[in-house]
Length: 325
Image (cartoon, rainbow, N blue to C red):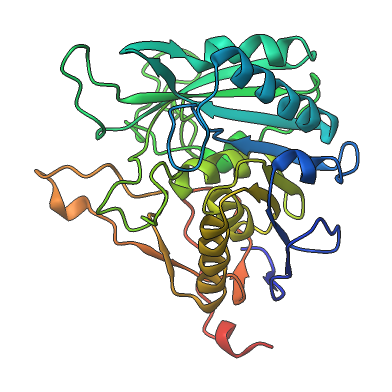
């Protein structure tokens, strides 16, 4: 166990401030991005509007939509550290019951700016709208780009349990040794993480909300403590929550005032220790194995916590922790 440290009280500002812990900007993300210096953030992770005409977006012609996305992406690349990453999570644009995969449409925007695609991560979830004239959609995509070939990737921080943790080599020079990494296995590029629906512990007023654990995996693997994480389409602040939980700093922009207010409230609850999230180690619910269910986790941003390097290594408890100032 490494030294216990204390996170200081969260400083939240409404305008860009490099001394803040979290910036929650109400307005167009392009107005915020122009105020951020070059190479300032380590990770950009977002889920832009899908141009479906939801209450928080104005439906645009597809070419106009792509043009707007290109302007935002260009600014994100400018403010991205040379060792940083961009994760653009998208689904499908639907027009007259015909789908257009937005990851395919947007890829040229990133490629034209010299970014390197490291993974096309498939986020699979079990619940969603039921289609009657095509197969129901149960996945979306995260495009992970890096700015250069020298980038941060902390695989050990996001390993998941081995399927056969005690499996050993049965022949050769390594006979008798564990065949898998004892820290766990690579989570692969297909992630089975429940989406946030009505009975999800994290559900807010947002209709298309990120689950915190999805962003935690990106934050832990692609940044270090104290570095900045940006979400240009912030919604209700899930990216900020995931960043702050792990001692990163967060910047977000959102045009809907009610969503910004929810983000502020979630951070306030996290400081008080009353914000509940779905823990990363919780498996997808299996009704035949109810004993495997893991209860929600209460987030606490301002208490003493041990530095935790890996996803599934539980913090050691210290009987004196609560009494240290």
